[in-house]
Image (cartoon, rainbow, N blue to C red):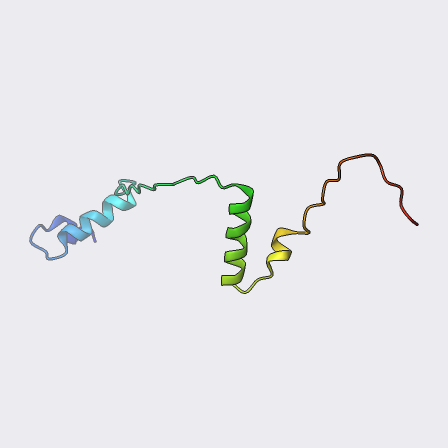
Length: 82
C-alpha cells in the first residue's frame, strides 16, 4: 500500500492515500441532517391512531389500549351489593 501511495502514476494512488489517511485517524467527516416534526394529539386522536395501526398490523387494539375508563358517577359513595 505504501508503494502505491508513493507512486503518483499508479492507477490506485488516490485510493491508497485515502486508506493510509483513514488508518492514521484522518477519517472523512459525514454529516446527516434529520428533521423531526412533533405532533401533539388529543386523547381521541391518539386512540384513533392506535386503532388504525393495530388494524394495519393485525393486533388487538384492546390489548394496546387497556380496559375502557370507568364512568364517573356524580354523587355519594355506593355500597357493594355483596
